[in-house]
Length: 425
Image 1 (cartoon, rainbow, N blue to C red):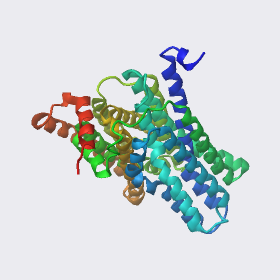
Image 2: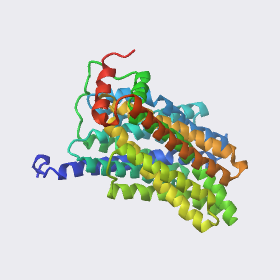
Image 3: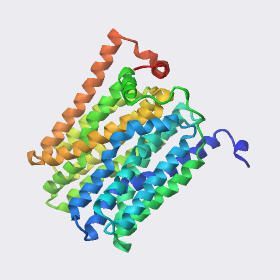
């Protein structure tokens, strides 16, 4: 039976399976890379030790600021699969080179290889997710379910990647773990080519938007603007929550291992929430789903702050992880529905790059302010999430009173895409 002979419902399902395989492979490589580089640097006993390991791990995320520029290449490409395949292959090759050459080349050369890998990161995350929104044959419900499973691949990558580094490192040495991650990315470069092409860009003669234009689109389309602000504020909280969990768990149990386990509970909660939304996607308008989940997230983070003992902390942090996954999936839905088709990758990657940058800042802030106590930091996190909710509600009310009605929805976003391609300076 050829692809053309397959039932219509079976073809999108097969495409989705290949997409999720690709996403799981490359995000496992991405999710374990920082841990792998840090472990490799510290365990090989070379110059720099933990300080160099931390620097290399940071160099993986710093290049995300270039994401909005890189996304233009993907939106402009006639076959986005080739752009993604190239980026995955370069990411994998850079990791393989670092694994083989660390300690044998000058540190500056190794750092340059890590930066090259980091430059591919925005396409591994938002760039790949933007292709899911462009797949044909998915109903609205199937699209929401697919976005839930896409969110699950982030959880899989962030869980399986570090686990693979640890297991292979213990059995075969630290280089083996990083080599495995590089091989996974290289395999993803092959499987992404099995996805169907999405055709040429909507307005090839206009070229991609400039970065300033992309952010102007996001700022102008009300739902994108509100969700971007909500993403930034909640990323500030989620970026530091695992660091806070480690300290709180240690205080509640008196064990450093229990503290690390509480941080892992948050990660497993995220994975469980992603699987749940993949099996039973939320219905209704995506931005309203984001609004409800912001309220739930504020409440759950507050419960983490108030947990009186370790057992209840485990429940609270697992719930916080699950709600974070649901919220992230809802933001994917907003981007897929309201991003102008001609700039979809740029919107996805630009919002994702902002989220990554703020999340990294949240991790740094949590570490810097830990002396104030984990409960105070969690209470502040709940307040910041509540502020995000207030911002969304306030912006929506202001827009509904003074500008275009919210009911314009998709068509408004689509028209924005056409307007911005026609010559905004």
